[in-house]
Image (cartoon, rainbow, N blue to C red; front, side):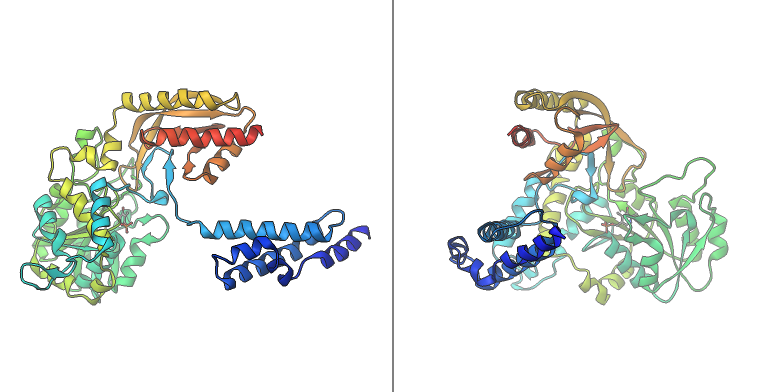
Length: 474
Ligand SMILES: *Cc1c(COP(=O)(O)O)cnc(C)c1O
Protein backbone atom coordinates (compact mmCIF):
# COMPACT_ATOMS: atom_id res chain seq x y z
CA UNK A 1 0.00 0.00 0.00
CA UNK A 2 2.79 2.35 1.04
CA UNK A 3 4.55 1.72 -2.25
CA UNK A 4 1.51 2.60 -4.35
CA UNK A 5 1.05 5.74 -2.30
CA UNK A 6 4.72 6.65 -2.83
CA UNK A 7 4.43 6.06 -6.55
CA UNK A 8 1.34 8.25 -6.78
CA UNK A 9 2.85 11.11 -4.84
CA UNK A 10 6.20 10.77 -6.62
CA UNK A 11 4.34 11.13 -9.96
CA UNK A 12 3.14 14.54 -8.83
CA UNK A 13 6.71 15.69 -8.36
CA UNK A 14 7.81 14.91 -11.88
CA UNK A 15 8.50 18.36 -13.34
CA UNK A 16 6.74 19.76 -16.39
CA UNK A 17 8.65 20.31 -19.64
CA UNK A 18 8.42 24.06 -19.06
CA UNK A 19 9.93 23.89 -15.59
CA UNK A 20 12.86 21.91 -16.92
CA UNK A 21 13.29 24.36 -19.82
CA UNK A 22 13.38 27.26 -17.39
CA UNK A 23 16.27 26.02 -15.28
CA UNK A 24 19.50 27.97 -15.75
CA UNK A 25 21.35 24.85 -16.84
CA UNK A 26 18.95 24.03 -19.66
CA UNK A 27 18.76 27.70 -20.71
CA UNK A 28 22.52 27.57 -21.01
CA UNK A 29 22.25 24.52 -23.29
CA UNK A 30 19.81 26.40 -25.53
CA UNK A 31 22.58 28.90 -26.37
CA UNK A 32 24.31 26.36 -28.53
CA UNK A 33 21.78 23.62 -29.25
CA UNK A 34 18.57 23.76 -31.29
CA UNK A 35 15.43 24.03 -29.21
CA UNK A 36 13.73 21.09 -30.95
CA UNK A 37 16.57 18.80 -29.91
CA UNK A 38 16.59 19.89 -26.27
CA UNK A 39 12.81 19.53 -26.13
CA UNK A 40 12.97 16.07 -27.64
CA UNK A 41 15.51 14.96 -25.05
CA UNK A 42 13.56 16.48 -22.14
CA UNK A 43 10.43 14.64 -23.25
CA UNK A 44 12.35 11.37 -23.59
CA UNK A 45 13.87 11.76 -20.14
CA UNK A 46 10.51 12.60 -18.53
CA UNK A 47 8.98 9.54 -20.19
CA UNK A 48 11.72 7.36 -18.77
CA UNK A 49 11.26 8.87 -15.32
CA UNK A 50 7.51 8.26 -15.45
CA UNK A 51 8.14 4.64 -16.33
CA UNK A 52 10.70 4.12 -13.60
CA UNK A 53 9.03 6.08 -10.82
CA UNK A 54 7.36 2.92 -9.53
CA UNK A 55 10.81 1.54 -8.75
CA UNK A 56 11.73 4.49 -6.53
CA UNK A 57 11.80 3.52 -2.87
CA UNK A 58 10.52 6.13 -0.41
CA UNK A 59 9.31 9.53 -1.53
CA UNK A 60 10.88 12.06 -3.85
CA UNK A 61 10.68 15.76 -3.30
CA UNK A 62 10.08 18.37 -5.92
CA UNK A 63 13.60 19.85 -6.02
CA UNK A 64 15.25 16.46 -6.08
CA UNK A 65 13.06 15.37 -8.99
CA UNK A 66 13.88 18.52 -10.95
CA UNK A 67 17.60 18.22 -10.33
CA UNK A 68 17.56 14.56 -11.31
CA UNK A 69 15.71 15.38 -14.54
CA UNK A 70 18.13 18.15 -15.48
CA UNK A 71 21.12 15.88 -14.78
CA UNK A 72 19.67 13.14 -16.95
CA UNK A 73 18.94 15.57 -19.78
CA UNK A 74 22.51 16.87 -19.69
CA UNK A 75 23.92 13.37 -19.60
CA UNK A 76 21.80 12.30 -22.54
CA UNK A 77 22.71 15.40 -24.54
CA UNK A 78 26.39 14.70 -23.89
CA UNK A 79 26.04 11.15 -25.07
CA UNK A 80 24.13 11.91 -28.29
CA UNK A 81 26.76 14.45 -29.29
CA UNK A 82 29.52 11.88 -29.32
CA UNK A 83 30.12 9.85 -32.45
CA UNK A 84 29.03 6.27 -32.21
CA UNK A 85 31.85 5.13 -34.48
CA UNK A 86 35.10 5.28 -32.60
CA UNK A 87 38.63 4.03 -32.44
CA UNK A 88 39.28 0.63 -30.87
CA UNK A 89 42.55 -0.79 -29.62
CA UNK A 90 42.45 -4.38 -30.85
CA UNK A 91 43.78 -6.71 -28.16
CA UNK A 92 42.17 -9.82 -29.63
CA UNK A 93 45.19 -10.90 -31.66
CA UNK A 94 42.91 -11.37 -34.67
CA UNK A 95 44.59 -9.27 -37.33
CA UNK A 96 41.79 -9.01 -39.88
CA UNK A 97 38.86 -8.70 -37.50
CA UNK A 98 35.66 -8.16 -39.46
CA UNK A 99 33.78 -6.74 -36.46
CA UNK A 100 36.60 -4.30 -35.74
CA UNK A 101 36.78 -2.91 -39.27
CA UNK A 102 39.12 -5.44 -40.90
CA UNK A 103 42.37 -3.91 -42.21
CA UNK A 104 43.82 -0.79 -40.64
CA UNK A 105 44.97 1.39 -43.54
CA UNK A 106 48.54 2.37 -44.39
CA UNK A 107 49.46 6.02 -43.76
CA UNK A 108 49.79 6.59 -47.49
CA UNK A 109 46.13 5.61 -47.91
CA UNK A 110 45.02 8.00 -45.16
CA UNK A 111 47.01 10.75 -46.80
CA UNK A 112 45.44 10.27 -50.23
CA UNK A 113 41.93 10.03 -48.75
CA UNK A 114 42.54 13.38 -47.12
CA UNK A 115 43.89 14.95 -50.32
CA UNK A 116 41.08 13.68 -52.48
CA UNK A 117 38.22 14.21 -50.04
CA UNK A 118 38.96 17.72 -48.78
CA UNK A 119 38.48 19.30 -52.19
CA UNK A 120 37.81 18.26 -55.75
CA UNK A 121 39.71 15.57 -57.60
CA UNK A 122 40.15 14.04 -61.04
CA UNK A 123 37.91 11.15 -60.00
CA UNK A 124 36.16 10.97 -63.37
CA UNK A 125 38.06 13.61 -65.29
CA UNK A 126 40.85 12.97 -67.75
CA UNK A 127 43.31 15.76 -67.06
CA UNK A 128 45.33 15.01 -70.21
CA UNK A 129 42.41 15.29 -72.57
CA UNK A 130 40.41 17.76 -70.53
CA UNK A 131 37.24 15.65 -70.70
CA UNK A 132 35.20 13.09 -68.81
CA UNK A 133 37.12 10.03 -67.62
CA UNK A 134 36.43 6.80 -65.75
CA UNK A 135 37.10 6.24 -62.06
CA UNK A 136 38.52 2.75 -62.46
CA UNK A 137 41.53 4.05 -64.46
CA UNK A 138 43.17 5.19 -61.24
CA UNK A 139 43.82 1.61 -60.19
CA UNK A 140 43.41 -0.41 -63.37
CA UNK A 141 46.97 -0.43 -64.73
CA UNK A 142 48.40 -0.80 -61.26
CA UNK A 143 46.34 -3.93 -60.64
CA UNK A 144 47.28 -5.35 -64.04
CA UNK A 145 51.00 -4.78 -63.34
CA UNK A 146 50.77 -6.40 -59.91
CA UNK A 147 48.73 -9.42 -60.94
CA UNK A 148 49.43 -10.06 -64.61
CA UNK A 149 45.69 -10.13 -65.40
CA UNK A 150 44.35 -8.93 -68.73
CA UNK A 151 41.51 -6.76 -67.37
CA UNK A 152 40.64 -5.35 -63.97
CA UNK A 153 37.61 -3.71 -62.40
CA UNK A 154 36.79 -2.65 -58.84
CA UNK A 155 33.50 -2.44 -56.97
CA UNK A 156 32.20 -1.84 -53.46
CA UNK A 157 33.25 -5.19 -51.94
CA UNK A 158 33.89 -8.80 -52.87
CA UNK A 159 30.28 -9.81 -52.26
CA UNK A 160 29.37 -7.19 -54.89
CA UNK A 161 32.12 -8.46 -57.18
CA UNK A 162 30.77 -12.03 -57.03
CA UNK A 163 27.19 -10.86 -57.58
CA UNK A 164 28.19 -8.64 -60.51
CA UNK A 165 30.34 -11.30 -62.18
CA UNK A 166 27.70 -14.03 -61.81
CA UNK A 167 24.94 -11.75 -63.06
CA UNK A 168 26.99 -10.51 -66.02
CA UNK A 169 28.22 -13.92 -67.12
CA UNK A 170 25.51 -16.37 -66.11
CA UNK A 171 22.10 -14.71 -65.65
CA UNK A 172 19.33 -17.09 -66.74
CA UNK A 173 21.84 -19.93 -67.19
CA UNK A 174 23.58 -22.50 -65.00
CA UNK A 175 26.61 -22.32 -62.76
CA UNK A 176 28.19 -25.54 -61.51
CA UNK A 177 29.72 -25.51 -58.05
CA UNK A 178 30.94 -28.15 -55.60
CA UNK A 179 28.81 -28.88 -52.50
CA UNK A 180 32.01 -28.63 -50.47
CA UNK A 181 32.33 -24.95 -51.41
CA UNK A 182 28.89 -23.52 -50.69
CA UNK A 183 30.37 -21.23 -48.09
CA UNK A 184 28.85 -18.72 -45.72
CA UNK A 185 30.94 -15.78 -44.62
CA UNK A 186 29.87 -13.99 -41.46
CA UNK A 187 26.18 -14.82 -41.73
CA UNK A 188 25.18 -12.46 -44.52
CA UNK A 189 27.18 -13.73 -47.48
CA UNK A 190 26.19 -17.19 -48.66
CA UNK A 191 27.11 -18.50 -52.07
CA UNK A 192 23.65 -20.05 -52.74
CA UNK A 193 21.90 -16.77 -51.81
CA UNK A 194 24.18 -14.60 -53.92
CA UNK A 195 23.74 -17.04 -56.78
CA UNK A 196 19.96 -16.79 -56.55
CA UNK A 197 20.08 -12.98 -56.52
CA UNK A 198 22.36 -12.99 -59.55
CA UNK A 199 19.69 -14.74 -61.56
CA UNK A 200 21.90 -17.76 -62.29
CA UNK A 201 20.76 -21.26 -61.36
CA UNK A 202 23.10 -23.12 -59.11
CA UNK A 203 23.92 -26.69 -60.01
CA UNK A 204 25.48 -28.36 -56.97
CA UNK A 205 27.74 -31.33 -57.58
CA UNK A 206 29.61 -33.82 -55.41
CA UNK A 207 29.18 -34.16 -51.66
CA UNK A 208 30.21 -32.05 -48.69
CA UNK A 209 33.53 -33.79 -48.29
CA UNK A 210 34.31 -35.14 -51.76
CA UNK A 211 33.83 -33.76 -55.24
CA UNK A 212 35.48 -35.18 -58.36
CA UNK A 213 36.13 -33.77 -61.80
CA UNK A 214 33.68 -36.32 -63.23
CA UNK A 215 30.92 -34.75 -61.08
CA UNK A 216 31.50 -31.46 -62.87
CA UNK A 217 31.77 -33.06 -66.27
CA UNK A 218 28.52 -34.97 -66.01
CA UNK A 219 26.65 -31.82 -64.93
CA UNK A 220 27.69 -29.83 -68.00
CA UNK A 221 24.82 -29.10 -70.41
CA UNK A 222 24.18 -26.50 -73.09
CA UNK A 223 22.76 -24.28 -70.36
CA UNK A 224 26.03 -24.18 -68.44
CA UNK A 225 27.45 -20.67 -68.33
CA UNK A 226 30.21 -21.01 -65.76
CA UNK A 227 32.14 -23.37 -63.53
CA UNK A 228 32.62 -21.78 -60.12
CA UNK A 229 35.25 -22.46 -57.50
CA UNK A 230 35.00 -20.80 -54.10
CA UNK A 231 37.90 -20.53 -51.71
CA UNK A 232 36.77 -22.11 -48.45
CA UNK A 233 38.22 -19.19 -46.58
CA UNK A 234 37.00 -19.73 -43.07
CA UNK A 235 37.10 -23.49 -42.68
CA UNK A 236 38.91 -26.56 -43.88
CA UNK A 237 37.51 -29.95 -44.69
CA UNK A 238 39.92 -32.46 -43.19
CA UNK A 239 40.12 -36.25 -43.28
CA UNK A 240 38.44 -38.22 -46.09
CA UNK A 241 38.04 -35.39 -48.54
CA UNK A 242 38.69 -34.53 -52.16
CA UNK A 243 38.32 -31.31 -54.06
CA UNK A 244 38.78 -30.61 -57.72
CA UNK A 245 41.82 -28.43 -58.32
CA UNK A 246 41.36 -25.15 -60.14
CA UNK A 247 43.80 -26.41 -62.76
CA UNK A 248 41.58 -29.41 -63.52
CA UNK A 249 38.49 -27.22 -63.66
CA UNK A 250 40.22 -24.90 -66.12
CA UNK A 251 41.13 -27.85 -68.35
CA UNK A 252 37.58 -29.15 -68.21
CA UNK A 253 36.27 -25.65 -68.97
CA UNK A 254 38.44 -25.29 -72.02
CA UNK A 255 37.42 -28.75 -73.30
CA UNK A 256 33.76 -27.59 -73.30
CA UNK A 257 34.46 -23.90 -73.93
CA UNK A 258 32.96 -22.84 -70.59
CA UNK A 259 34.62 -20.10 -68.55
CA UNK A 260 35.79 -20.80 -65.00
CA UNK A 261 35.45 -18.30 -62.18
CA UNK A 262 37.02 -18.35 -58.75
CA UNK A 263 35.92 -16.40 -55.68
CA UNK A 264 39.24 -16.11 -53.88
CA UNK A 265 37.94 -14.35 -50.78
CA UNK A 266 41.10 -12.85 -49.45
CA UNK A 267 43.25 -11.23 -52.10
CA UNK A 268 46.81 -12.17 -51.43
CA UNK A 269 49.41 -10.39 -53.54
CA UNK A 270 52.36 -11.44 -51.39
CA UNK A 271 54.17 -14.70 -51.03
CA UNK A 272 52.87 -15.39 -47.57
CA UNK A 273 55.18 -18.34 -47.19
CA UNK A 274 57.82 -15.64 -46.67
CA UNK A 275 55.83 -14.79 -43.60
CA UNK A 276 55.85 -18.35 -42.35
CA UNK A 277 52.23 -19.01 -43.35
CA UNK A 278 51.12 -21.24 -46.16
CA UNK A 279 47.83 -22.06 -47.73
CA UNK A 280 46.35 -18.77 -48.85
CA UNK A 281 46.30 -18.71 -52.66
CA UNK A 282 48.42 -16.04 -54.31
CA UNK A 283 46.57 -14.03 -56.95
CA UNK A 284 49.36 -14.25 -59.56
CA UNK A 285 49.58 -18.04 -59.20
CA UNK A 286 45.81 -18.47 -59.35
CA UNK A 287 45.75 -16.50 -62.61
CA UNK A 288 48.51 -18.62 -64.07
CA UNK A 289 46.16 -21.63 -64.05
CA UNK A 290 44.30 -19.89 -66.87
CA UNK A 291 41.13 -19.27 -64.82
CA UNK A 292 38.89 -16.78 -66.62
CA UNK A 293 37.59 -14.63 -63.77
CA UNK A 294 38.69 -14.12 -60.18
CA UNK A 295 37.31 -11.88 -57.46
CA UNK A 296 38.72 -10.92 -54.07
CA UNK A 297 38.41 -8.41 -51.23
CA UNK A 298 40.40 -5.22 -50.73
CA UNK A 299 40.33 -5.27 -46.94
CA UNK A 300 41.45 -8.77 -46.07
CA UNK A 301 45.04 -9.88 -46.71
CA UNK A 302 45.49 -7.12 -49.26
CA UNK A 303 45.45 -4.73 -46.33
CA UNK A 304 43.49 -1.93 -48.00
CA UNK A 305 39.96 -0.52 -47.83
CA UNK A 306 36.68 -2.40 -48.30
CA UNK A 307 36.55 -3.13 -52.02
CA UNK A 308 35.95 -5.94 -54.46
CA UNK A 309 38.44 -6.59 -57.23
CA UNK A 310 37.51 -8.45 -60.40
CA UNK A 311 40.18 -9.73 -62.75
CA UNK A 312 39.52 -11.40 -66.08
CA UNK A 313 41.69 -12.97 -68.77
CA UNK A 314 39.51 -11.85 -71.64
CA UNK A 315 38.13 -8.50 -72.66
CA UNK A 316 34.75 -10.00 -73.64
CA UNK A 317 33.97 -11.10 -70.08
CA UNK A 318 35.14 -7.77 -68.75
CA UNK A 319 33.04 -5.76 -71.15
CA UNK A 320 29.96 -7.74 -70.08
CA UNK A 321 30.84 -6.89 -66.47
CA UNK A 322 31.57 -3.20 -67.04
CA UNK A 323 28.46 -2.53 -69.08
CA UNK A 324 26.12 -4.24 -66.61
CA UNK A 325 23.84 -1.65 -64.92
CA UNK A 326 24.64 -3.39 -61.61
CA UNK A 327 28.23 -2.13 -62.00
CA UNK A 328 26.94 1.40 -61.44
CA UNK A 329 24.96 0.33 -58.39
CA UNK A 330 28.00 -1.35 -56.90
CA UNK A 331 30.54 1.28 -57.83
CA UNK A 332 33.46 2.07 -55.58
CA UNK A 333 33.37 5.48 -53.88
CA UNK A 334 36.13 8.03 -54.15
CA UNK A 335 37.48 7.65 -50.60
CA UNK A 336 37.82 3.92 -51.09
CA UNK A 337 39.39 4.35 -54.49
CA UNK A 338 41.96 6.72 -53.00
CA UNK A 339 42.80 4.27 -50.23
CA UNK A 340 42.96 1.37 -52.68
CA UNK A 341 45.27 3.16 -55.10
CA UNK A 342 47.61 4.27 -52.32
CA UNK A 343 47.71 0.76 -50.82
CA UNK A 344 48.36 -0.91 -54.19
CA UNK A 345 51.14 1.57 -54.96
CA UNK A 346 52.97 0.30 -51.89
CA UNK A 347 53.10 -3.18 -53.42
CA UNK A 348 55.46 -1.76 -56.05
CA UNK A 349 58.01 -1.02 -53.33
CA UNK A 350 60.60 -3.28 -51.74
CA UNK A 351 59.48 -2.67 -48.16
CA UNK A 352 55.73 -3.01 -48.68
CA UNK A 353 55.43 -5.47 -45.79
CA UNK A 354 56.46 -2.86 -43.25
CA UNK A 355 54.19 -0.16 -44.66
CA UNK A 356 50.99 -2.21 -44.88
CA UNK A 357 49.75 -2.71 -41.29
CA UNK A 358 48.13 -6.11 -41.84
CA UNK A 359 51.29 -7.54 -43.39
CA UNK A 360 53.48 -5.90 -40.76
CA UNK A 361 51.44 -7.53 -37.98
CA UNK A 362 51.61 -10.95 -39.64
CA UNK A 363 55.34 -10.50 -40.05
CA UNK A 364 56.02 -9.16 -36.53
CA UNK A 365 58.80 -11.20 -34.87
CA UNK A 366 57.68 -12.84 -31.62
CA UNK A 367 60.67 -11.25 -29.87
CA UNK A 368 59.34 -7.81 -30.73
CA UNK A 369 55.83 -8.70 -29.56
CA UNK A 370 57.29 -9.91 -26.27
CA UNK A 371 59.29 -6.70 -25.86
CA UNK A 372 56.12 -4.60 -26.40
CA UNK A 373 54.17 -6.71 -23.91
CA UNK A 374 56.96 -6.35 -21.34
CA UNK A 375 57.21 -2.60 -21.80
CA UNK A 376 53.46 -2.32 -21.39
CA UNK A 377 53.45 -4.60 -18.33
CA UNK A 378 56.03 -2.54 -16.49
CA UNK A 379 54.08 0.66 -17.19
CA UNK A 380 50.82 -1.02 -16.10
CA UNK A 381 52.38 -2.23 -12.85
CA UNK A 382 53.22 1.36 -11.94
CA UNK A 383 49.55 2.33 -12.02
CA UNK A 384 48.07 -1.02 -10.94
CA UNK A 385 47.74 -0.23 -7.20
CA UNK A 386 47.48 -3.99 -6.59
CA UNK A 387 44.04 -4.03 -8.19
CA UNK A 388 44.69 -6.99 -10.49
CA UNK A 389 47.31 -9.68 -10.96
CA UNK A 390 49.24 -9.02 -14.16
CA UNK A 391 51.51 -11.36 -16.05
CA UNK A 392 53.01 -12.04 -19.48
CA UNK A 393 51.88 -15.25 -21.16
CA UNK A 394 52.63 -17.12 -24.37
CA UNK A 395 49.59 -17.49 -26.60
CA UNK A 396 48.56 -17.69 -30.26
CA UNK A 397 47.14 -15.08 -32.66
CA UNK A 398 45.07 -15.62 -35.81
CA UNK A 399 45.00 -13.86 -39.14
CA UNK A 400 41.17 -13.83 -39.24
CA UNK A 401 39.14 -12.31 -42.06
CA UNK A 402 38.49 -15.63 -43.67
CA UNK A 403 42.16 -16.16 -44.35
CA UNK A 404 44.30 -19.10 -43.33
CA UNK A 405 41.82 -21.01 -41.18
CA UNK A 406 43.53 -23.27 -38.72
CA UNK A 407 46.83 -21.41 -39.01
CA UNK A 408 47.96 -19.59 -35.91
CA UNK A 409 51.02 -17.60 -34.97
CA UNK A 410 52.86 -17.59 -31.65
CA UNK A 411 52.41 -14.40 -29.65
CA UNK A 412 52.61 -12.83 -26.19
CA UNK A 413 49.71 -11.46 -24.20
CA UNK A 414 49.33 -9.62 -20.94
CA UNK A 415 46.99 -11.61 -18.73
CA UNK A 416 44.90 -9.78 -16.13
CA UNK A 417 43.71 -12.02 -13.28
CA UNK A 418 41.02 -11.11 -10.77
CA UNK A 419 42.19 -9.03 -7.84
CA UNK A 420 39.99 -6.28 -6.39
CA UNK A 421 38.69 -5.83 -9.93
CA UNK A 422 37.07 -8.82 -11.63
CA UNK A 423 37.94 -9.71 -15.23
CA UNK A 424 34.35 -9.01 -16.31
CA UNK A 425 34.42 -5.53 -14.78
CA UNK A 426 37.75 -4.81 -16.46
CA UNK A 427 36.46 -6.07 -19.82
CA UNK A 428 33.40 -3.83 -19.54
CA UNK A 429 35.40 -0.79 -18.43
CA UNK A 430 37.86 -1.21 -21.29
CA UNK A 431 34.99 -1.45 -23.78
CA UNK A 432 33.51 1.74 -22.31
CA UNK A 433 36.78 3.67 -22.63
CA UNK A 434 37.65 6.08 -25.39
CA UNK A 435 39.37 4.73 -27.41
CA UNK A 436 37.72 1.45 -26.50
CA UNK A 437 39.86 -1.60 -25.83
CA UNK A 438 38.70 -5.05 -26.92
CA UNK A 439 40.44 -8.10 -25.51
CA UNK A 440 39.29 -11.62 -24.78
CA UNK A 441 38.56 -13.62 -21.65
CA UNK A 442 39.96 -17.14 -21.71
CA UNK A 443 40.20 -19.54 -18.77
CA UNK A 444 39.19 -16.80 -16.35
CA UNK A 445 41.95 -14.43 -17.50
CA UNK A 446 41.46 -11.20 -19.46
CA UNK A 447 44.03 -11.17 -22.25
CA UNK A 448 45.48 -8.46 -24.45
CA UNK A 449 47.48 -9.72 -27.42
CA UNK A 450 50.43 -7.57 -28.49
CA UNK A 451 50.47 -8.77 -32.07
CA UNK A 452 47.56 -6.44 -32.81
CA UNK A 453 48.41 -3.66 -30.34
CA UNK A 454 51.01 -1.36 -31.85
CA UNK A 455 53.77 0.38 -29.94
CA UNK A 456 52.11 3.81 -30.17
CA UNK A 457 49.02 2.40 -28.47
CA UNK A 458 50.87 1.28 -25.33
CA UNK A 459 50.86 4.68 -23.52
CA UNK A 460 47.17 5.12 -24.38
CA UNK A 461 46.37 1.69 -22.98
CA UNK A 462 48.26 2.42 -19.78
CA UNK A 463 46.42 5.73 -19.34
CA UNK A 464 43.05 4.02 -19.82
CA UNK A 465 43.94 1.33 -17.29
CA UNK A 466 45.09 3.99 -14.83
CA UNK A 467 41.70 5.75 -15.15
CA UNK A 468 39.86 2.48 -14.56
CA UNK A 469 41.95 1.68 -11.48
CA UNK A 470 41.55 5.19 -10.06
CA UNK A 471 37.80 5.10 -10.55
CA UNK A 472 37.63 1.80 -8.66
CA UNK A 473 39.77 3.09 -5.82
CA UNK A 474 37.76 6.28 -5.29
C1 LIG B 1 35.21 -12.55 -47.41
C2 LIG B 1 34.70 -13.33 -48.53
C3 LIG B 1 33.67 -12.82 -49.33
C4 LIG B 1 33.02 -11.49 -49.06
O1 LIG B 1 33.92 -10.45 -49.30
P1 LIG B 1 33.56 -8.97 -48.81
O2 LIG B 1 34.71 -8.15 -49.29
O3 LIG B 1 33.46 -9.04 -47.34
O4 LIG B 1 32.29 -8.58 -49.43
C5 LIG B 1 33.22 -13.59 -50.39
N1 LIG B 1 33.76 -14.81 -50.63
C6 LIG B 1 34.75 -15.33 -49.88
C7 LIG B 1 35.28 -16.68 -50.21
C8 LIG B 1 35.25 -14.61 -48.80
O5 LIG B 1 36.23 -15.11 -48.05
